[in-house]
Length: 142
Image 1 (spheres, one colour):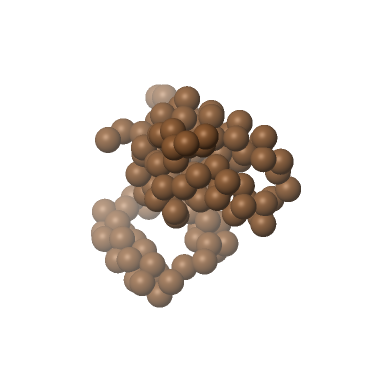
Image 2 (spheres, rainbow, N blue to C red):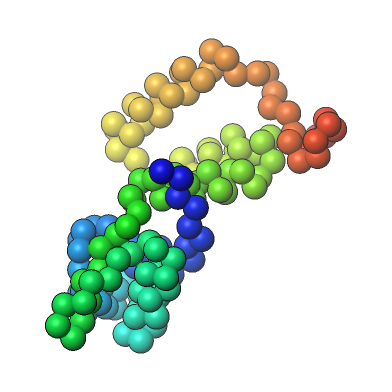
């Protein structure tokens, strides 16, 4: 499944709550988010409506309100967002950017083991230097 959602930082906050709870009401989302951010309930409901319009969430009427469920898988959505970011930066800067992300991320020992295994595997076929991909046909130093 190729997920190509344009999700704003505020919408990510909503999605994180819905993914965590699996299904939820706007009241539950408002309760959780008001402990984290200073948003009015109307703002949260607007964000929910946008996510339903984007087909990221399903809204099923229940009484006077709605039950919200994610329509997109969490990991695939995060992977697609990361791919979109890295598709838009120079390949020569990917390593430094990944280093920055890893340095600032909370990682478990298991996460680190997996990363080390991936890096060990990639090291075997890695070039000495990654070429710039900013201008096709031109070797540039960025």
